[in-house]
Length: 229
Length: 303
Ligand SMILES: Nc1ncnc2c1ncn2[C@@H]1O[C@H](COP(=O)(O)OP(=O)(O)OP(=O)(O)O)[C@@H](O)[C@H]1O
Ligand SMILES: [Mg+2]
Image (cartoon, rainbow over all chains, first blue to last red; front, top):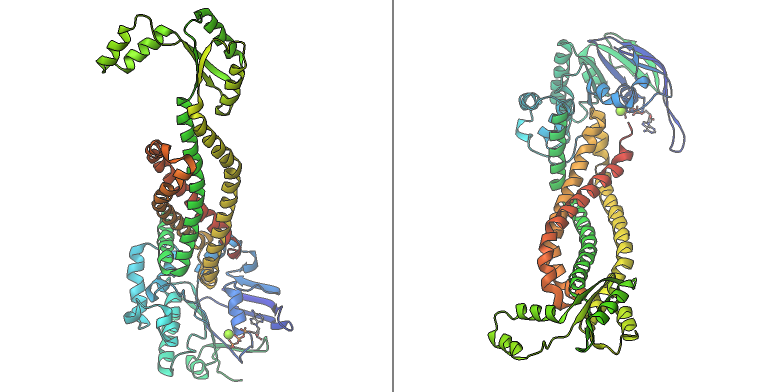
């Protein structure tokens, strides 16, 4: 489903250029559950950003279902992004919209009918345990709650691929495990899941493929991996 | 999908309008001010033109001939006057016609009619009624008549009473023509610039929001249209507020422009123009809102 071929990403600007990814290649098949782990700054978020095209590779190719993302026309980019549900590391919630509206937004942009929105949004909000906060604005809820809104928005349109950048970063261990179980369940139903995380306990409990990054390079890729750096 | 996009983006624009608070107030007030200035300029020139037209229709130069002057002399005077390039029309009014007109004008007053009939000879004078092509030319026409070879046949030239009014309108219209067009263009430009900047500020405030919408897969239209609709709502609000403010402002301003004597006439005509002015404001306001939003959001839409 996703293939990186000799991908290099250099961020220009700042005091000096940063080589965030250096000759990274891997293949993720449909219905896989893959965790990217590594120290802060290792390049985890960069890999995810290249997939949903927030960033472009400096060299190399990023293929989505065999198609090079660099070849997607600007007007088709929204369609590409709608295939993916993304949980951003910094949540990226719309501040002027309520929790309900934020989750509904993912369906609205894809043109889902209102009846579908009225049905699915409360369901997913219920699943992440925020029913009583549905009418609150993002600045009125806690960090962990924001994270769960971001997860609900990523799941609600049932995308073929879920990308989750530190989805448990602000959660206590029990809530964190709840979210991971949710992701595992969705994966079981056929959705590909790509996770970036620091959380050792989480990774060791998932018992799925783990790709370890260090300074922009892949140093380990194990199909029942453990967190080992 | 198109209808869904339109209703959803309209709703979002509407929400932005009410959730933006102080920026909304700023944008609407600026737009209102711009519309108001433009319409005051427009209204002043409309009312000055109406006043002038009204007076122009009324005014003429009446040249009365002494009663012993022969009709053919008056006729030849008329045909000579008609040759002046400043003269639009010259109408001969015979003594009999003057008498008939006089009787018609005083139809309800038997004592006056009796008094006129009591006089054996027609007491009224023959006259030529002259209309100028341009109100500024009455002076010139009157002067050349005074200096013409007919001056000894002329009993009186009647036009002084309008002179002040004409002068007033002429100078007003001249200033308006000169400064009005300039001010109109200037303020339209200022209005566009300010509205553009205010909307750009609101969009700048939404910078991260736009970024998020793009990352979640919103199309350009889905991002742009709420701002366009917001601009439309700005325009509608501004038009309504400025038409409400325009009425009292014009009540204060018009007397200075056209002189209080003519205010009555102008204001009755004016109410007819109000619907038109409101529609114009609506169109200008909405267009300003739309154009400003589209321009302001353009640079945020690169993928
Ligand atoms: N927009 C940017 N401009 C410049 N440098 C950047 C940018 N984004 C990331 N970097 C740099 O690229 C490197 C990789 O960043 P990335 O966000 O991928 O790390 P990460 O593995 O996600 O770290 P973390 O665990 O802290 O989220 C870092 O050194 C970072 O400073
Ligand atoms: Mg990161």
